[in-house]
Image (cartoon, rainbow, N blue to C red; front, side, top):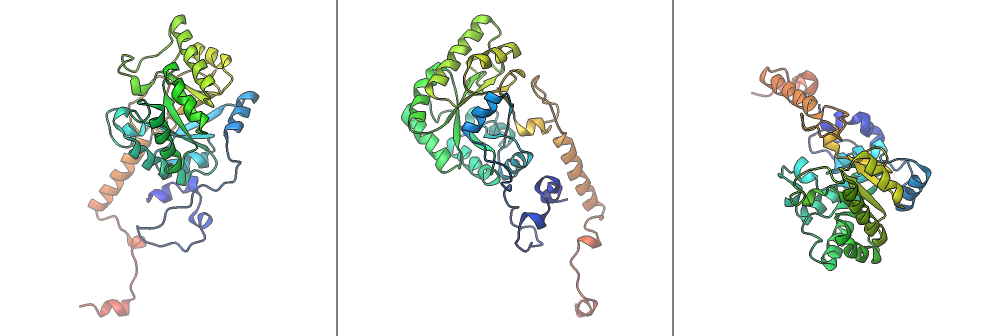
Amino acid sequence: MSLLRALRPVLGSARTQTAFVPRFYSAHHSPQASDQTRKKVTIPELAKMRKNGEKISMVTAHDYVTGLIADKAGVDMVLVGDSLAMVALGYPNTNQIELEEMVYHAKAVSRGVKSAFMVADLPFGSYEESPEKAIRSAIQMIQKGGMEAVKMEGGRELAPTIKRLTEVGIPVLGHIGLTPQRQSSLGGFRVQGKTASGAESILEDAYALQEAGCFAIVLEAVPDKVGEWLSSKLEVPTIGIGAGPGTSGQVLVMLDMLGGFGSFTPKFLKKYSQFLDINVGAVKEYHNDVKGGVFPAKEHCYKMGDEEAAKLK
């Protein structure tokens, strides 16, 4: 089964996707990007959702197909997260991916997304050196990658840089609590803010990012009570990942929530599919069909008239 056929329930039939005549060989054109049948999500719309108590949904995407799936599913925000370093490129952590690689993947995702608000991580090493470097990196992500905003990890120490970006018109999504790019200095992937003093320190970070102009802030790996408390103190939306239900919205890595990595199940993750098992089974069935001479069958073959076939010696 081709990937396009497998995704047909999500993408729609080829007949409704494009007016072009289909080509019946493997190098077919990509399906058209998601039809813009719903209103484009914007920063003011996200603020309105928070004000009205409507939860914000965000999911990661790392290529055209995952962007298309996210947009077709109706999520509010699509994040081209640096988590793609591990889930798509096989790096051991997020710190090894470079800006050029992130821009490449952002560009692919942007072709599949029409309605969701698009934001991408600035990877480690692309913004810490100076506000000027951060601006240059963000411009690349927006101009070449097709993104509408950038996400940056860090607290009050990053506020001056974020302020410079927002002053020149670059929207920034903040990220505090557990910041994976700095996980080594935090002692690994550990829950943050488990004490009152720790939670108050995160709040100071949040206030600094809000004051610097962040349109929203990701809260990662904090106790649920802290996630709710922080969200009640802020005037901008909060997007939680392992921060409980009291935030303005939630984000998950798509391949994690689809079960793309078997037994990988952090406490905050809910799996909505068994992607790895399902697809290993499908490829194994194909392998067995080829070995057993079952595939290709007659219905998969191009035909030649008997008269012409008789001329072949």
